[in-house]
Length: 479
Image 1 (tube, rainbow, N blue to C red):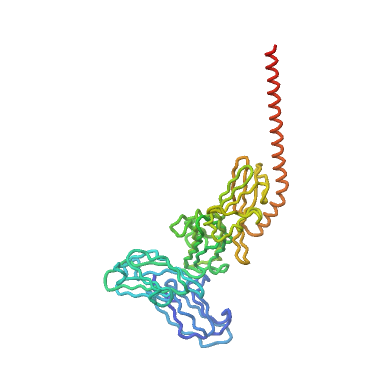
Image 2: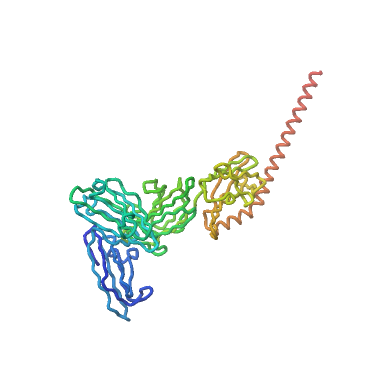
């Protein structure tokens, strides 16, 4: 176990490496852990064979190196060196924190630090500054430089100084270089930045999707901060529902999620309204955003990992539904679904597709068309049909279903997303609706016919009473 001063990190470099080889490194191996614990959430990597491991940097001030050999097949082993690395290094964790030396105290003069963030192949890296205060002189003296890649080609480098936080940065490759430099006088508080990479960050723009914690269903890593941004076109809302949740339990002293937790924010950043913060294994109910952005954040501490989480989301298309006693009127703004043709939006069947009207897709349908039928809901007769919005691409089917309903007597319409459950549940729901629709329709029609007949009898009685009264009055006058 290697321990350095609190707030520092450790960089481990292998010079020689030759161990017995196995596909899963089950025989002879070296395992590197963040911290003193052998918790799998702290595992940085397991290595065997003759390929030299990459340079490794811890996420905090403790690093454990475990060497194991079995009773068969030996080899020359390994040689490695380490150094305390408070300023720069090669960072390979899924997420981490970068700060200027001595932060939040003023940084020293004549400092120069290079952090190379390296993610898995085909991954990208997201860098977010949360605090920033450097000398402000057109970035000629003290500055932070961010380079998209491992080099410092002029066209890829952006320099920042002063007190304005740099913009959020997403790399175009699996490497990002951050350089901090200060001159011989005038300092500042410095900076603090978070980075995340690979399966620990993503921006999702699809209308449906699934998210899981890193390594799910295996244990997630310790000491990470992961962010997933769901960003949809204007007008949409996002419905999120949980498939699985198993995080470290809440603090028994405070009854709060003080250790590992998953949080959801009603917007694109953590400054937006908090929709919920969860830990333990109680699965929350569905939640829905107020707009077209939703942020999920997973935070874990330095020990005790669990299986993690699995969630799904579906976009709710902005739909305006109204009705009269005889028909539905449905309207969807074109700007919300610019990728769809009108034939992809239909009521009941593709033969009742939307029409283009100005900047909207519109459907006008009488109650005797487009698969519309009466049903009984809470002792009230309503007219019901299904609106389909088809986002399918290629061979991947993705059709969203919305139940539209109308109470004709009050001319009140409503729309509800129904394709937000497991496919098996949807199929069962569809079969149940199909089986129950006929008797409900007959009951509704019977009720309406009964009411219509009662109205006719009542009106006839009133007319007859009026005629008899008129005859009686005339008789009295003649007498």
